[in-house]
Each structure stands twice: as C-alpha cells, then as structure tokens.
Image (cartoon, rainbow, N blue to C red; front, side, top):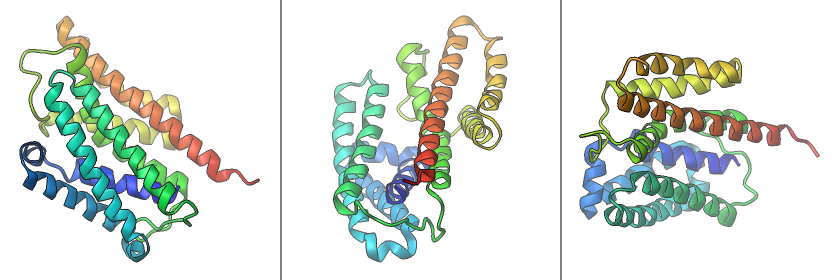
Length: 240
C-alpha cells in the first residue's frame, strides 16, 4: 500500500503542484511540453522514493511511461470533446490511479513499507498526506469543471484555470476542511465551507448556483477522501 501511495503522491506533485498553466498549454500543443511534464512527474516520483530509488527505479520509469500514454489519450479526448471538460478530467485521473495500481500489483505486490521522502510513515498518515494534497490541488480543477459543466457563465470557460485569489481560497477551504475532519471531528470539516455559503447567498441566482456547485464538488471530494483514508487506517490496524 505504501508504494502505491508514494507513487500517487509523486503523481499529484508532478501533475498539479509542479504543472503551471503555461505547461498545461504547452503539453497540449506540442511534444516538448509533454516531455517536460512527464520528466517532472518522474522527478517528483523519484524524489518521493528517495533513497529507495535503487530498488524501485523500474516503478518510476513505468509510472512516467504510462503517465505519458494517459496524457496522450486524454489530450486527444479533450480535443474531441471540447464541451466535456469534467468527463475528460475525471477520466484522466482515474486512468492515472488505475495504471499506478497496476504497476504496483505487477512489479511489487509484496513490497514492504516504503519510506516517503526518507521518512517511514504509517499507511494511514501517508494516506492522509496524499489526501490533503489531493483535495487541495486536484479539487481546484474538479470544482471548476463541475461548475462549468452544469452552470457555465460568460467567460467562465477559459482554457486554463489561473492561480488567482478565488482558486487559492478554494484550496484553503478544502485542505483545511479535510485537516479538521481528520484531526478533530468529521462534522467540523463542514465549517471551512461556511464562508463560501455566506458569500454565495449575496450573489445573483446563477452565480450563487455556481459557487454552491463548486463548494459541493469540493465537499464531496473531501468526504470521499476522508472515507478512503478511514478504510486504509482500518486495514492498517487489522491484525489477523
């Protein structure tokens, strides 16, 4: 499990944290951008595995290779389904997760616990770290594409989601919600969403609906992530 979580962490770092908007545009319009993006994914995954890279170097290479294939598939799908950004985004991330799981199942099904960035973490804590990164960064695009799919606004469908104040606020909203849910109580994870609800209540109907859709998508991602972390923690504590 820790190898899969470490590969997933490397993927999230390379696919979201280390992928600025200009690189997204570049990879969709040429080979150079795609090569740079895949190299960053490989580098971030290698960094996560750290000193154990000598043991799992093939996993890193395979992760990079299948990442490139998935990118080619979803870039082609995006150009053919321009109005279905949400579908393409979900497809992209599901394929990435499934291919990483397949690599672990094929290459190292009985792998021992992996040190992440050189630190040995219990699976539950590693899953929590991955989950927080997921809801914070991946959640931005999920919320954006969900709102665009249901309540598009004039000028809202832009090629790339910019790193502006609303996006940063959404990242803080989802990240803090999951942290509070994990560290204090699940129901208190609702509190970080209240400022958006109060803000949305003052907006015209269509903009209010869009804000509530983004909040709902973020909350749903937090709930699903919390449930997955809870399951991993339960499995980790199980002793036959």
